[in-house]
Length: 322
Image 1 (cartoon, rainbow, N blue to C red):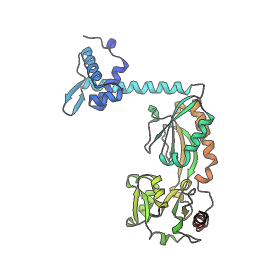
Image 2 (image 1 turned 90 degrees about the vertical axis):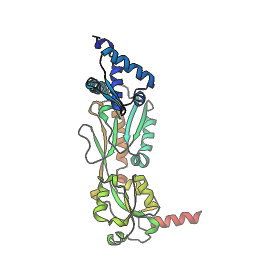
Image 3 (image 1 turned 135 degrees about the vertical axis):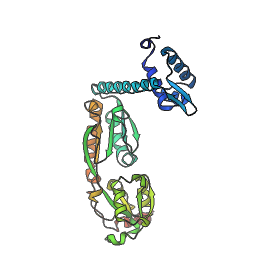
Image 4 (image 1 turned 180 degrees about the vertical axis):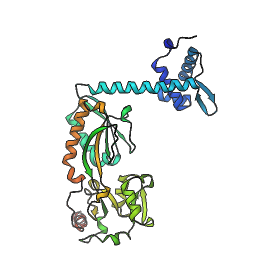
């Protein structure tokens, strides 16, 4: 019988795991960075060496045999162990240098973090940032990212970090639609057109709030990004709740009330426990926390509310000057 210990290498385990996940050789080849013919040939060599079939070939794709499934599961465990080991090594690095992978969402990046990241790179030129955008939580245990910057009231128990600020939300409308010195009463506002995040964000507090307080027929526009929501209010499509750090910097918007406490969320800076002592991670988190700390009044909606006609007057003054 062939000696499996002599013919199996880590790359073989990776290959079998990729085929089991992709269920097709071309897709598996893309996962491991090889061409289709090489994957086909190497799979045959592994099976011949073991004297076992690792996959059944069906019209629906490659289905692992019990032996193939066991090998793929072992590859998963080996991959996790290797990742955990490299995390520990990174946590012991001495010089703050190298690549740092940071995950956040587009709203925080565009309206808050990009200038902060730029300042960090000036101060720490030996560090390179790889920014990954998405609202879904990436797996920091598998090094999908080193640091997560998220707005959440329930950070994962598997991560460590600090609460940097509280993100306030308030109701806004287009400034030119509200020239009065005082905002209309809520009863009148409820009769206006509203904008909202889409139904895929049904778990968000702001979406639940609208469903509870605003008639469905009054919500005439939904969009799946906060950036799009802000632009919709600014275009006059309807009124809507927005993060204060976005809306309070836009002269075309006016706040229609104080921040709604029930819509606020914590802004967290998170990392994996194995990386918290890494010089580059620690340096990055300290820098970002300091910069966000200086912006707390804006983030937490503490900026004074201008009179309702102020933004409109400013716009008219700009137009006259032109």
